[in-house]
Image 1: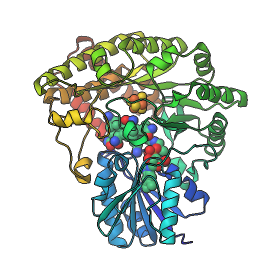
Image 2: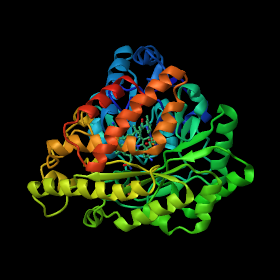
Image 3: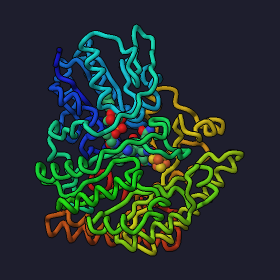
Image 4: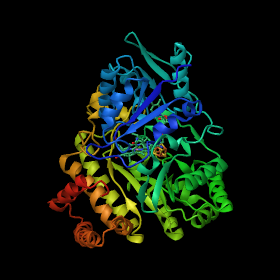
Length: 505
Ligand code: B12
Ligand code: SF4
């Protein structure tokens, strides 16, 4: 068996901003390979300053370069790594995985650098691909694998979603964990973690449907809490940020995790648990009491819209009232919510002009909904994103019909920027206003931001200056929110500038 280095790269999701997080996608994709003794080197910009040099050097002795990528900027970083690696070693095989290649396996393979795409969950699939490469065999019988041979693209059917029980633990030891822990609102040493994959729902805008086809698998409660204990003991982690798509899919499992934590005295704080407003608002008090007892910090919830017609068009299977009921329940039990929402959706039977107007109405109704929610609990955080069409979702074809200029290749998808109006019916003013409200005003409305931000500044003088500046900016942002005045964005531009030079803002 050939066990040369397997070189993996996690490109930064945003231009000019260093990653602060653990490369979780690559760690999970490496689980089985690591257990089987393969030599793995994971490169990311927070792990090495000169990361492209490391790629070039390591590529010389590597059989494979693996790239993980979402749609957007990560693609460009991934392609740059491919160029550097191929220059160092023209025989290196290049494998892409993650959401973007999973949505577009064939189009990803059209890029001359890419040899193989792993669609969906990667733990076993990646190992099997490497084994086949070692043995010089074809990928014909391997579900979920797409590949290129003599310029021709071959595609296999999707892979069944394997159970998580019995799969090796996440090999955090493959990276310098100290460089990947981050201070969050709920812990000084927070680490990212995932306990399930997929989602059984079919929201019309969400790419989860095309990658996992409404399937979901979750790790059993005991194994999840084993992981928490290990992270607590080995890395002195005090908080865990969840990256599940829908943590609360199975309420029995969720309760069992909280109970297991209490029984075993596990003290790490959990945050960013993903849930749906209706399911959680309807959940029994036992679940809520368990979350209170375990000091669960926050839930991430796609509230999506303050307009019932838009929620219906999204097939979200909730109404606006569910968002209010859920927010009240969280307030009662002292749990913070981060609410996501979308505007600029391609509603059927609307012209572009009507959709631009509808986008304005959606912004308005989301503002109204968040005004009500945030005025009841200032710890809740709101977010508004502009819709971006993804294939395999029910809204994609509508978007193309309505004039969405579909990117035609990997490079064009790499240039998609989420706050710069990916769809033509979102006008310039809306494209400017949405990120200003979402990234700037909502940040200052969130009562926890100042508590958390000032803790990160150790120097007393800097801290005092920071608090002064923060409070002045906060005053302006609150005034804007009170009067719903989002024009003449000089303060926002200054904030954006400050953000570009300080990665913690
Ligand atoms: C953390 C996260 C982020 C992070 C970045 C993560 C990163 N990769 O660096 C941040 C906060 C920056 C982010 C931003 C955004 N995100 Co995001 N994010 C997530 C989240 C919650 C977790 C990702 C994760 O780590 N999952 C756990 C890992 C283990 O799963 P995984 O990545 O799928 O990896 C597995 C397989 O894909 C495969 N695999 C992955 N990589 C590789 C590589 C190789 C070589 C192989 C063989 C296999 C393989 O194996 C892994 C193990 O099975 C996901 C939802 C989710 N549950 O995944 C959304 C998600 C990925 N994000 C999404 C979206 C829409 C966004 C934003 C557009 C949100 C917004 N409107 O601003 C932005 C865009 C970012 C950008 N500029 O490109 C979408 C996907 C969009 C897309 N087509 O890429 C998701 C799926 C959420 C959703 N359901 O809509 N996000
Ligand atoms: S938006 Fe959330 S609930 Fe809807 S399909 Fe995506 S992950 Fe599932």
